[in-house]
Amino acid sequence: MPHTPTRDRVNPAVVDTTPKRRPPWLKVTAPVGETVAEIRHLMRGHA
Image 1 (cartoon, one colour):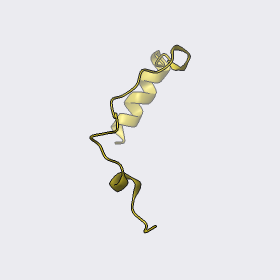
Image 2 (tube, one colour):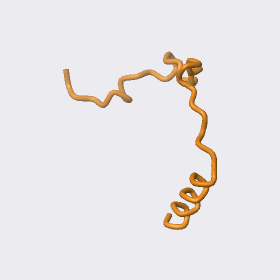
Image 3 (tube, one colour):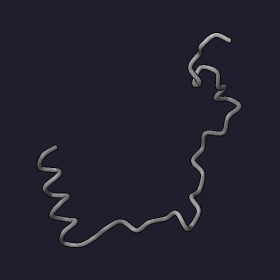
């Protein structure tokens, strides 16, 4: 079989590419607080 990248072998008309729901145990709350805000401000200043 010749080497072809996977995306070239997939037919997008047949494959369902809609995002799936995540299970409830996988959901994580985003970190909040003064320390996180300081770090975010620091990192965005260096972007």
